[in-house]
Image (cartoon, rainbow, N blue to C red; front, side):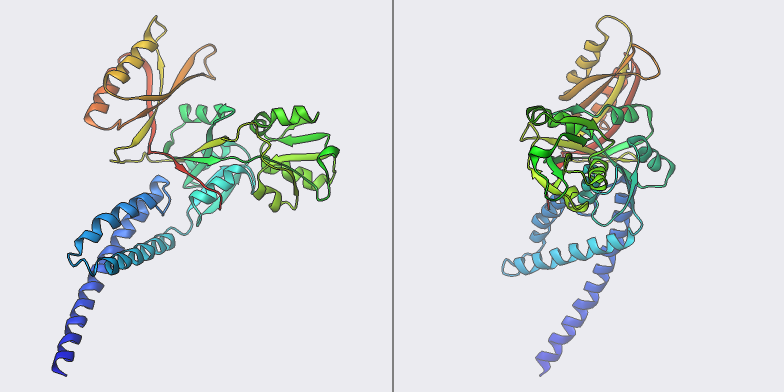
Length: 365
């Protein structure tokens, strides 16, 4: 009996120590939640949690207890996420389009617990963050088939927000129409210009007239409201279900590898020490022979691998262009600061528009 009493005293003492340690851990979660909200980062970081488990499991020096300790850590992480979600109630994410648009789907997959703010345009969503009405916005920046989204790149060039994360979402375009309709009946197809471009071969092969809409979800809503079997939309399966439409033909996009990159824009630049980070650089060069080659040479000479380099016209200066570049590495390191300083000597305008770790793929749920 004395041994049992002693054991219970040891457990009581351990529980008190555990309670104090748990409180410290949850207090740290408050700091994590604040940082993630400020920088537009999702609560769940699966890669980070995996790395923490692999490292922290070794804190348990008794190998027979390690699996139990791992379970305890997993439970603590789940409680931490729940607490962060509670602290983050009211987190607002803006996007362009209406419910069911691909941007809305991306926002829901990145921030599953957020409040969503649909906007009429890319610029409106961007301005909602700039004004503080939203904490961040999710906007498309590039499609693997149709190319860059120029309007968003221009906002990135002229506006004050920063990219804190980039996510790849495979896009499956479907021909959707009113229930009971057949593909052979469809004469007109309505969708966003990007979707129409991605499905141009299918549209041409079936002799359909293409009509542009501001986004895929609005196109679907138009088809649902018209209830005309000769009119169809191109959109996602989620959108078809949302508006009570049927999928008439699946995966009609020309490329089976069709993927859209979505960026999260925030008011504060993200800081990261990850080795596999990237940064977005926007710059203009002087109107001199070899100025662009010189800029690219400087970036490469400091060991930064350019993954993307393209030009865009400046809207306020006819026949003047800016350059959008993505490079691997840390622009805020000592090397990065030296590179930016030298680059600034040959560029009229230079801006690090954001940095992020390698893209995360947003899988269908």
